[in-house]
Image 1 (spheres, rainbow, N blue to C red):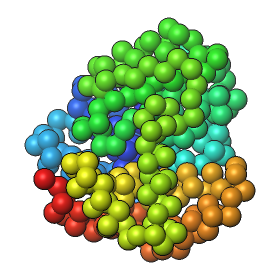
Image 2 (tube, rainbow, N blue to C red):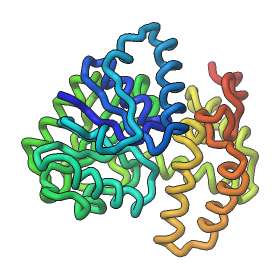
Image 3 (tube, rainbow, N blue to C red):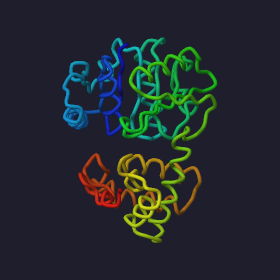
Image 4 (tube, rainbow, N blue to C red):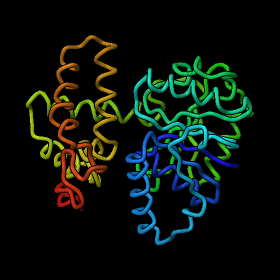
Length: 284
């Protein structure tokens, strides 16, 4: 099986590396050479982490979508969480690949039915959602929609197993899947405390880490997920709810973080500075 991973940021770079590490041929697509360079930098970090260069033999890099999708059997879309952007991109993918190629989305917030209209033959389309970092949280949430072919669903379940993931099979569409249905309310409560001026983010994380004996608090997780993803989630919720507080929060995230290049672990600075974020001193 040859796999295309389209979008190679923090999570896409992990997915592509893990698939290649598992012995599959992987084509990686990014929008331009700069973004592709960041992906290669991520892969070099993982090479040092795993002390192996073998996956590089399985990895090919493209800024041409047509080149990336040539002769692939499975596509994993992992571009930013913007509904119109994803719809447009998946439409392009669908127009390029043959009708028997399986197309998946790694979307953390949108259901497959939100995106399926972009796909010719939507029976071969479903969600394959990874957690971050995938080597510690090695689950893969597989969720179809009403038209997804169960044979294809089961093929994706087997693929997840073959790349070292524990498949979480979701038989009924659920916004935010299983993991984020639990995770997002937790992150939301922490953001509300911070952006409403109730407490500093470090104290919020300190309270969580010390009290629950966790390795990481909500703002450490936000840095891990990436501020761009958090911004997109907050912006989408603001538009849906018409909530003034959510619009204000999205504005603050953009001005205080995105506009200043504070994207999280990806850029070495988000709420915390990396490596060695200050919350680690509270971890027992």
